[in-house]
Image 1 (cartoon, rainbow, N blue to C red):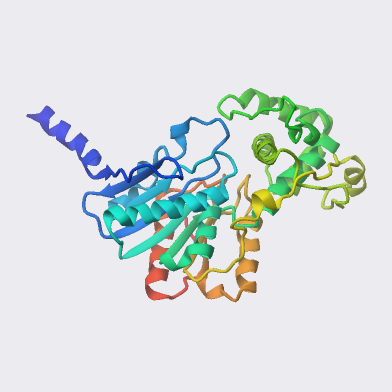
Image 2: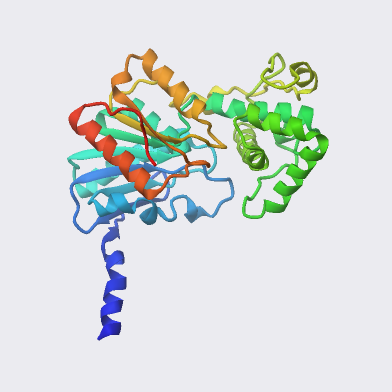
Length: 368
């Protein structure tokens, strides 16, 4: 009897929700999770950047656990895998909208719908609300790519250009990354530990003080510099292969903010653009035109999307559009990209819901 009772108890979480099949969609794979007692409310979720070559089923793996607090409150959750990997912001927007419509067709119209996403999915969240905001009651972008996507990726380009000038021969050259015929590949972070240790050792040997200053220039801790370089390599190589070349041009860029700006500008790797950036970045570019309550949550330190990129830039765009009344910020003392606790996420979620329900903008708040 005790064993039977234990089996029943262990089975309860599995019975608390079910996956719904909406049929094939142009946007590719997806997950639709329905709680046992649906409250007629829907959360559309957008996942973050997925490295090229990742297992096909990994885009939204662990979604049930990540959004357990939302499912436990009776919300349905729908999340697209997107039709492509890598930089897929525009594709993520289209796939999310297609999935939302398919959900309504099968399950009926929710009484309220919310949009949320992490990292690049936070950028998808903003783009959805800027372009399809009439269908949503609120949004929760988390550690989001909320600047103009071109500018965020250009920051990664500039990091490589100046790093290769100051610390040559340690990571691939931009010229090779953007040469589609080169052998530069994608970095698997699961196996990159030894290589990251080699990079840190090499920069410290070259000039430890300069290494620390360079990391600080890009709002990084020194220990996070190798990982950021690997992440940037993946993103830049992805862009190169999607466009067939280089959309960035730093042949006339004047770099500053380094210990020796003359040295940086004399040694930086320079590369002319040979592709139109609009082919990748123009669709659903950031505008700041929101008409839906948004609560952005961010950590005070983020090695991939620093707060000044995630918060300050979008705040200025929203202000320029006269939409300040729709934008609020919560922050945490997390020390890594999207490092939020479940409690912090749910507090931000509830703040967004209250904002949407009452129209009263919450104050900026630190969530411990």
